[in-house]
Length: 220
View 1 (cartoon, rainbow, N blue to C red):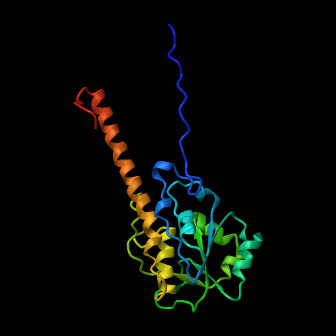
View 2 (view 1 turned 45 degrees about the vertical axis):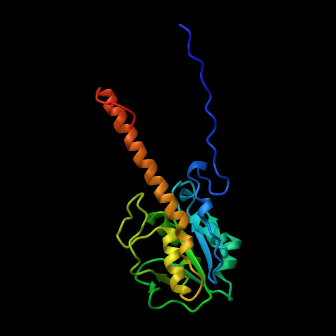
View 3 (view 1 turned 135 degrees about the vertical axis):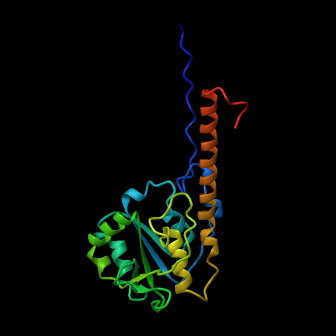
C-alpha cells in the first residue's frame, strides 16, 4: 500500500515587533505616548515567552520606557543608571506593608517608575534577590478598578496585569497630563481576539465530539 505524500505546512507568519502570530497581532492598536514619567519594566525571563503577557505591549506604548529581561538587575548598568538618576528619582510599584498608597500619597514628579513583570512568585523572587530594588521607596495601588484581563483570572480581585497597573499609576502620577486611554487599546484588542479564539476552539471541540457520537448535522 502506498502512503499519501506528506504535505509540508507553511510556517506560521509572526509579527517581528510583538512576537505574536500575524493573525492576532496587536501592533496596529499601539499609540506611542510620551509621558513625563520614565518607566522601567523588569521582566522575569520566564515571562518573556508568555504569548498573552502585557509588558512588551506597555513598552511599545510608552515612549519613555525601557524593558529589561533578567534576574540580576543589580549588575545591569542600564537598570542601575535609571535607578540612580537624580533628575527622576526611582520609585518601585509593589504592594506590601511598606508601600505608600499611590492614590493619596503620590511622589512628587518627575519620577522613574519601576515595575516588576512576572507572576507574583517570580516578582517576589526578583525583589528578594535584587537589594537595589529593596532600597527604593515603595508605592502601591490600593483600590484599582477590577481587571479587564478576562483571559485568565487574577489571584485576587484587586490584582491587575502589568499594563493596567501602569495605566492606573501614570494617571495618578500625571493627572493633568495627556490622555492615557490609548495605552489600553492593544490590551483590550488582544483580550477580545484571545476570547474569540477560545470560543471558536470550544465550538470545534464540541462539533468533533458530536461527530464521534453521530449527532452532528453540519459545521460549527
